[in-house]
Length: 180
Image (cartoon, rainbow, N blue to C red; front, side, top):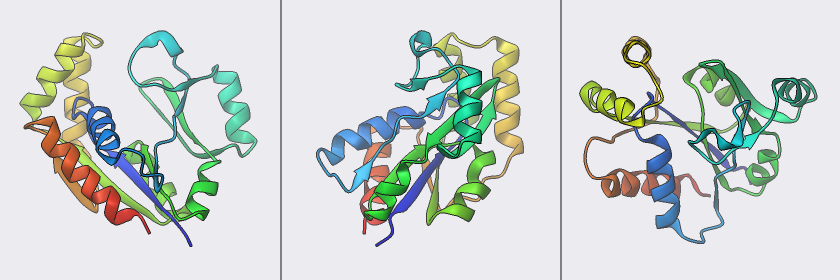
């Protein structure tokens, strides 16, 4: 039995982490779906998602030593998903990971993967990014420009412009279908 890698992609400010967390809560104790923590070269206390913080040197060791199933860089940060997801996939589970668009080809080549794009209208994205207070106006403009310039070949798309509960329910339904 082989599980499915559910790759979550979308622009900054789309609410990917919020939708994932809300869907996880809706799924409760369903052990057919797992959400591994990402490995990042960002300090653990830097805010944002719950992640495994490593130094850039440690990240290179993990990457070069085969300890990462997927890895990429974005906005000056290195990201990775631990190779231990292979155990969950071998057990037939759906493994859910927020990845970069640039990692989609590697994910599709290595795993039975589906890509779920979570997005929102450009004005909503801009408002959310400004509300985070982490980026300058120029940074926000750059993120929005990159988001509109890159096409994503998604298997499923969720527009997260309305109530979080609606997007979470749609995502939970996709995850249930991904379970084998």
